[in-house]
Image (cartoon, rainbow, N blue to C red):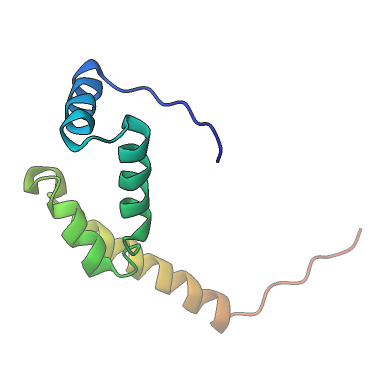
Length: 94
């Protein structure tokens, strides 16, 4: 095992210690379990999954997100089309 140090707020440490005591386990064991649970979750791969995850943050922070995403995607696709449809200009040697 690798030793890793993290900073917890006083409230986090107290809650973690209380939970560990109630379960008869160590703080480290609970942290490892939480990290494993987090790592087992799949990474969102689609815009819809990302949007669903962001909506948990709060709707006010997402105002304009969908339009921004569409604009960025449209610009990205336009850049790809421009690269494919035009041939690069040759540089003149001096």
